[in-house]
Length: 202
Image 1: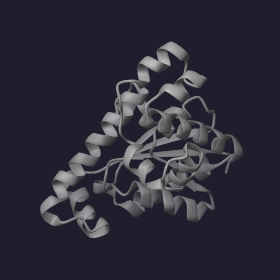
Image 2 (image 1 turned 135 degrees about the horizontal axis):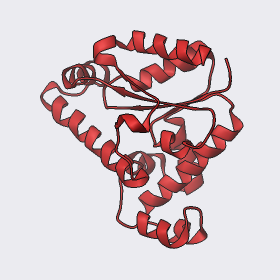
Image 3 (image 1 turned 90 degrees about the vertical axis):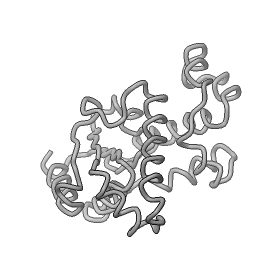
Image 4 (image 1 turned 60 degrees about the vertical axis):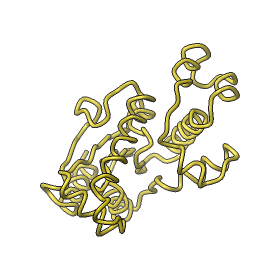
């Protein structure tokens, strides 16, 4: 298997996190998901809870600051609002981890965009129909059945707005990824197997 950085973007409840963990375990690759929250919190000086609540929120200041000062200037880091600073810090962490790990799995957090120029990147988007995702939200995440649809929809909306805002691209659009797979049609185990075979023989 040649070096490969796998970014897995996913709709809420589609099983993307589980697929990432399966790939990590079977191919013995590091996976960076919730661990990124702790690393970002350490560097930002914010609590883990604050990062969890703000990493997918957006503000109106970021694009203006980038246009004026560039993405890694001191101005942006000191003047950006907390959500922007979280995104910038997390972007640097993801880039550093990609440089330190020839092969690894990244879950969400715009990693497909942040690492878009990396020669080893293989970006995947995991989707599924709403019924499948609502069912998983209830069974896997203990979401109250009467609130499941609205919670799934809200998470998707937050991820879409966050991705579209910070990348200028459309979340889930086929042109942004190397591969899109539907767990509602194929199943989580089949999607995992497909990706492992592709990674092994790429």
